[in-house]
Image 1 (tube, helix red, strand yellow):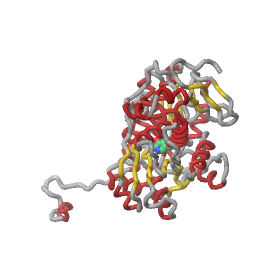
Image 2 (tube, rainbow, N blue to C red):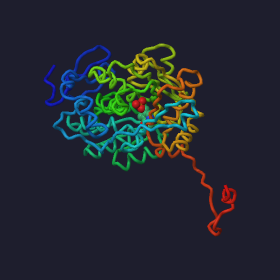
Image 3 (cartoon, helix red, strand yellow):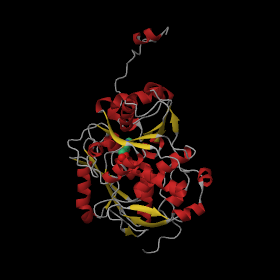
Image 4 (cartoon, rainbow, N blue to C red):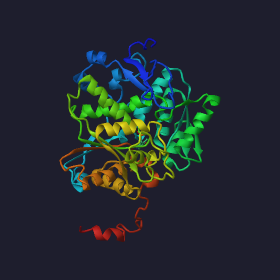
Length: 415
Ligand SMILES: *Cc1c(COP(=O)(O)O)cnc(C)c1O
């Protein structure tokens, strides 16, 4: 292996397919058509940092500097990512028959979704490595985040989205100055378009898991969760799974924390990958006990982040949930909006439709007794409800401006 970059603990990258090693500090795409994974000198990390040191720092992503691939003397491309709150949900918990239900609310991150975690790291690496034109297929929020971080970095963002991508995602990309294309097809077809034209256009393929560094940013979800829980992880975690970067990243975080000795031999949480029954390729593969997933067709769901019929990291998602003792489960498409409304109105949390899928899965797990009333359950809210204009209730009652109180207020007067 060539010498790793100075002041950075990355030793190499590794292929989970043939275990081949690849040099640190370089531009990388896929190997044998599958993702590469960044490895660190965790022994050395143990000598440099400990749990108290990490707790004493600020920041949601860059506090984990020693466990990230950007050399320490390089300024990251950042929009001030802060740790996201873990919120108790007693009302929703009561509804589900759970004593300890929490939501980790990523809607507070830059551009309103957790995609910023991956992009701050990947765009920082891209800039450091001298890339100029970043291109990505997106089902929605990844495009907005790429556009914003590329703008911050002074790089070009080229975004390819299915025609039915939420209107806010389409317009935010334009607002942040990206070149945006609406494609007659789903995200995997947008991805194909990027790959086919990459060489001619000088695009670097920024698709989920087709470059190795977005995963490292998403990994901070697991690191941050552990820190906030006082290094005592929940029993059960539900995660809305599309391309799976967040789930795979979380699992990688737990492995690294174990290697650092920071989890003190505790059992790791059961990870539940949640998908809509309108697009559930990982669930199909899980049910059949297969290593890879087949393309799901046709794919329909309002949870646009989960409209991913084929994931390049499918085997990594399946391996993580199997190792954790969890499952891949379907939530019902017909119930996702009502769960979204429940979380918003009962808890004041701006819950995205993707996480509505998780709540439906959770209700089923409770009904089946697979999750008990005393289990500590955590659900990821991966984005803000406001980004899904098409999913928000639309009809407002109107009041006749010539009357101080419209007739429709009468029933409430003495209530
Ligand atoms: C992208 C996205 C997902 C899916 O995330 P993966 O890590 O790719 O599985 C879930 N929810 C929202 C809001 C998203 O934007």
